[in-house]
Amino acid sequence: MAVCEILSVGTEILLGDILNTNSRYLSVELAKLGISVLRHTTVGDNAERLAAALRTALERSDIVIATGGLGPTADDITRDVCCEVMGFELQMDDKIADGIRNYFAAKGYDMPESNLRQAYVPVGGDVFENHNGTAPGLGLKKNGKCVAILPGPPYEMAPMYQESVIPYLSE
Image (cartoon, rainbow, N blue to C red; front, side, top):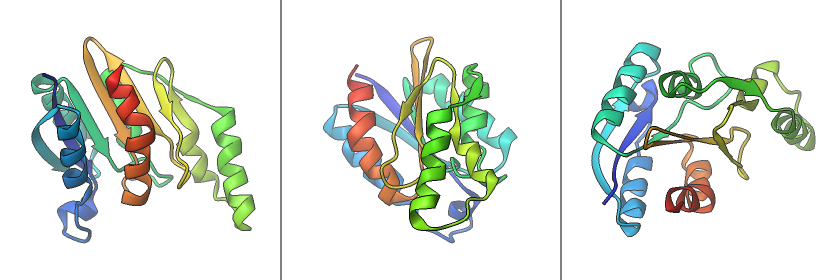
């Protein structure tokens, strides 16, 4: 039986500014797949602490699901840190970049260039479409370990889990 750790990323969770409903949701859903959740870990927006938490989670689990930190701001570091720890290089995906531009245009908003950070994806990794926001989710498989990285907002995370992560984990 596969075992999993849920890694919630965000200083706002540690400070109690927002309630971490993602871990509860994922625990319930993973149990339906027969995947045991060993731990919930929360770490702030700090690259060194996030890298350490991910390395520790990978030592004791087959699967790590990280939520949060995929957005356009400088403190959204989950994608970068997870890819670095797992040994994946990031590259710009022009199709995703165009989708982000179109998302803003359709809403009639000017797009800050920082939003294009969300279009960097791991070479050799998997990309999960986000039908409810701009940040795609990511899947990294290496050396028998699997890391799924999902957006933090529950209205983005839950549908992405259902549409993309369940089939990804079932492979």
